[in-house]
Every structure is written in C-alpha cells, then in structure tokens.
Image (tube, rainbow, N blue to C red; front, top):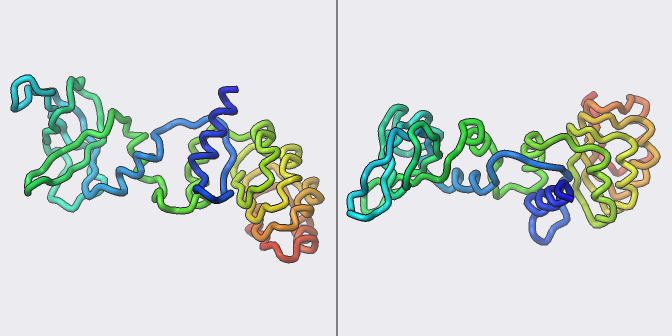
Length: 243
C-alpha cells in the first residue's frame, strides 16, 4: 500500500495540471522538486558548512549561523569558495552540518538565507534537475534515474489509466509481460521503452496502440526485424531504435 502511494505521488508531481502526460515509478529519494525551483529563482546559490552559531544582534532573537562556502553553484556577485558568511536567524546549527544557502539583497545589504540541511549529493541533484517550467515528459527521464527500478508490478498499477498520452518507462525492468497493462491505453501517443527487456514478443501489443506517434526502443531487446515489422504495422509512428 505504501508503494502504491509513492507511485500516485510521483504521477501527480510529474503531471501538468489539465494534461494526461505522466510517468510510472515506485519509491523515490533525494530532495523534492521545490529545491530546483529555489535554485532557478535565486541569483546566488552556494553549498556551505556550518562553523558555529552566534548570538543574534538583537537580544532574545534567534541565533545566527556562520558558514564557510564550499561550492558556488551560481552567482551574480563576487563570491568565492572559502568565504565566511553569516545567515541570520537560523537557530542552533551543529558544527559541520551542510546547507544550501541563497543570497538576496535588501536596501543594498546582503542577506543570506539557509534553505535546509542538505548533503552534497542532494545539492548536486537539485542543481542538475531540469527547469521546473519544462514539460513533465522532459523532466521525467532525469527524475526516474533517482528512483528504485520499476518492474512489471509497478506498471500494473497504471491499469485503467486509459487517457494517458505520454508514458516514460525507459531504463526500467519492465518486460513483455508488464506491457500487457498498456493494452487499454488507446490514446497513448508517446512511449519510451529504451533500455528495457522488451522484445519481439511485444510486437502484437505495441501494434495495437494505433495512436502512437513516437516510440523509443533504443537498446531494448527488439530485433532489427521486429522494428521493421512495427514500422509496417504503425506507419504513422516514428520508431527510434538507435540503429
């Protein structure tokens, strides 16, 4: 039941309101997409290490934090690695904790804001993530690389979603058996099966998806003859096999 919930959360996160474009998956890890939004919306983003927390300028206020910049991701200022900065009102941070910090200006003064405690791996993940304003189908391949492998059981959870128009299953553990769950998706226009174990045995099912206009089967188990057969059966579909 928990895995099913994760699947529905991902479907909701990657779908654009009012469309039927989506992706299938199980559990995820790493920072949420909102981190990518913060990076996109900030002029200066750095990764820093807490040196210590200090007493605030005003009595009774929340303690400030001193951070050493370890990596500068983006900036419009003269900010270099190693610089010590003070973030106001961060509370009691532990020495050695890492954070993503953003800079904003108020009346010509610099103010550093600590977004959250974050590992370097998660920081790099957020930086590399596609722009949140891109279409879901363009973001899906990136995020799916950070998910546990999708199997035939995962695809089975999509049974009944007959209005899907775009589905990314590339680089997953989906097989010919799992594709049976797509039989009712008669409105599917784009399908990614690259890097999967899908073989010639799936040709009859794929050929039945008459609305397909784009099919990716690069590095799958489909033979050259199988691809030719699919092109005959789906003449209006662009089939990309990497050959």
